[in-house]
Length: 163
Image (tube, rainbow, N blue to C red; front, side, top):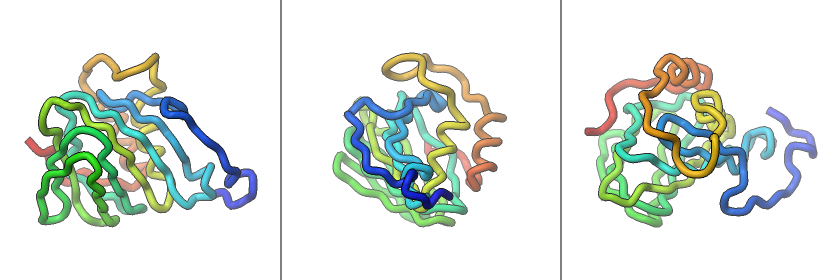
């Protein structure tokens, strides 16, 4: 974790700015990394591809919050299941199992906040640099790469995606 003044300089990113990665069939745009915030947080803008639902999983090293900007999700967090619509904020403390699935035809866009920072590396290491705008062509996920990234970033898959 960096704590020097170099890592906490102010900056501004436009809507499409930030390192973009294709992660599974999604687009992850890194808006703030732990190295840019002195380890305080990481922030990722996610644009979800059709049918995306992560496995039921737990974060061991950070709390994860989602702010849904567009689209609609069914979210499972602990023993609760609810519908999230634009403007919804979802807080998932570390150690609490969670997942979601897309509802409707509008592809979701959301902000994913990791506190402390570092969890954003999961999308970087588990994905690949985006080869242009938009979403990648649909393809089967690289399960070994995703598992290695999950292990590195202290995430544990404990169940299937929502169906």
